[in-house]
Image (cartoon, rainbow, N blue to C red; front, side, top):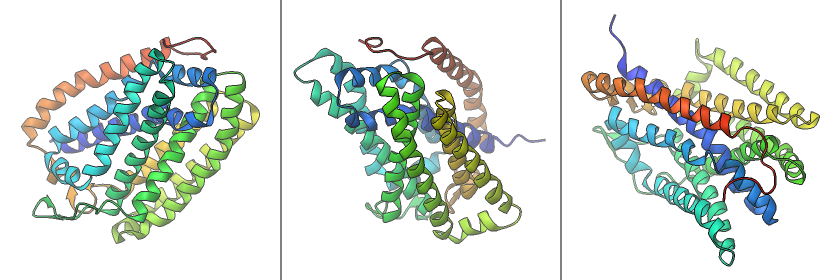
Length: 334
C-alpha cells in the first residue's frame, strides 16, 4: 500500500499552524491587552508571564511557513503574492514586539515607546494574521498555476472583519492566560476581561459560521452535504461545551479551566476551516496533491520532520514545565 506523502505533510503543516495559533496566540493576546493595564508593576508581571516561552512559540510559525515552501511549492508561490501586504505587516509587528521584550527592561526614559511597540506589534501581528486568513477563506484566484488577482484583493469587508475577530480571540487567550499565570489585582481584572471577551469571541464565531458557507458554493456543500453535514452538528456542540466550561470556570474561580476551554474554541474553529478547505490547500483552486513536491523530496523531508518535530514538542513541553506556576510581582525576566 502506497503512503500518501502529500496528505501526511498536509497534516504536519496543519498541526504546526494550529500549534502556532494556540501558543503564540495567548502571548500576542497579552500584548493586545497591555494598554488596558496602565500600572508598571502589572505590565511587568504580564510580560514576565510570557517572556520564557514567547520566542519558542514562534518556532511553529517557522516550521509551518518553511514546510509550505519546501513541501507545497505551488501553494507557497500562489499564496504569497496574494498576501504580501498582510504577511509583511505581520512580520514587522512580530519584529517590533520581539525587540520590545529586550529593550523595555533597559530604559526608563524610553520605556513608554517599547510599551507601545509591544502592544502595537502584537495587535498588528494578530490583525494581519486575521486578514490573511480571511483572504484565504474568501478565495485566491488562480490561472495556469499562478496567482491571477490584484495587489489589493486581500482587502475586503470579510478579511477586515476576520482580522478584528482574531484580535478579539487572541485577547481572550491572553486574558485567560493571565488568569492562570498571575495573581492579585491583575488576575481579578483579567478574569473580568475574559468574561466580556468570551461573549465577543463567541459572537464572532457565530457570525463567521453563518457568513463563510455563503462565500462559495463549495463551502455550503461541504457543511451541509453528505456525509460532512455530521460535522455541522458535532462541531457546534463541542463549541457549546467549551463555552460552558469557559464561562463556568471564570465564574467559579478556576484558573486553568478557562484557558484550556479557550484553546478548545480555537482548535474547533480551526477544525471548521479545515473541513471547509479539504482537500484544497488553496481553497477551490489547488489541492494538496496538485501543490506537492515530488514524492522523493517529500520522503527525504519527512525523515527530518520525524526527528525534529518530536524534539520541538519535547523542549516546548519542558519549557512550560520548568516555568509552571504563577508569576508574582517582582519575579521574572530582567
